[in-house]
Length: 123
Image (cartoon, rainbow, N blue to C red; front, side):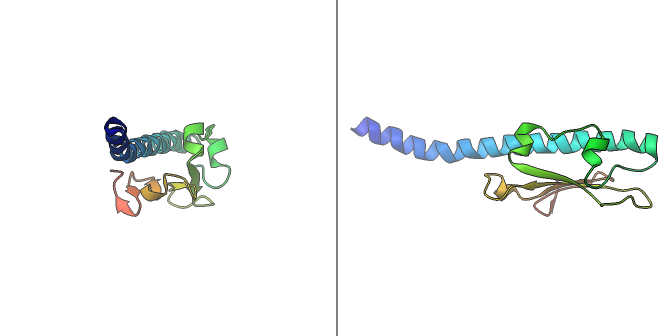
């Protein structure tokens, strides 16, 4: 009986750490997708002299949101229309009720600025 209690206590300690590790992995997948999208945006700018923005931007970049990201984040590219000078902001918003909500919104803009939950950087 004592062994069962000890195992239960260890599980109670380890499980939150395990969930935190999974959340960080999913956040990393979203960050990688945003970085890949930013790279594609730079290539698109060279060809079209503007960034792909709005609802059809991912299709214009020939990208689809990976399943491991789409299960936890909604990815959008702002603004809705091209701007002068050209600019974009990539936004990954955690789905309501998902385990990623504590991480907050991830952003990456055309100048390379990254934020997580409104704070500079993705750490």
